[in-house]
Length: 164
Image (cartoon, rainbow, N blue to C red; front, side):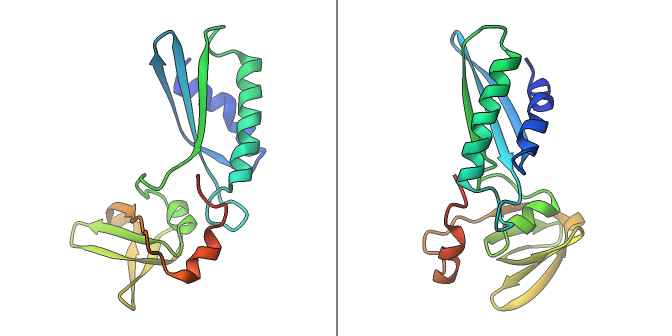
C-alpha cells in the first residue's frame, strides 16, 4: 500500500466530485495505518473546494478503500482534508484558486507581499500597496499564502464554506 497506489485508485473517485488529489500520505500508527488524502479543486466559486465537496468525496473515498482493501484487512484511519493554507503555491492553478488572498512571493531578485489579483498559466498579478505587479511563475522560487486574522470585510462573504 503505497501513496502512489492509493492515489491511482482514488483519482477517478475524486474526479467524479470535481476534485483532484494534491497528495496522499500513509503513516504507521501502532498496529494501524493512517491514510491521509489531501484534495484540491476549483470548487463552486473557483477558489478551492467547498466543505460539501470534501464531505461527499470523503464518503466515496472511504467506500473505494473498503472495496479495494489496500491494507489487506489491517485497520486504518482515513483522514481527508483540503490542500491547506500552509502549502506553497507551486502551480498556476494554486494562484488562481487563491485570488484575493495575501501572498508572499520570493524570486531570485526580490520578495514581495501582495494580494493576488489574477493568474494565468505563465504569470501572477499581485496588488502591492495599491500598485499592480506582474511576476512570471517561472521566476518564483517560493510563494505562500499569508494567514490574515483581520481580513478585509469585502472578502468575508467569499470565504463561506471555502476551506477546512
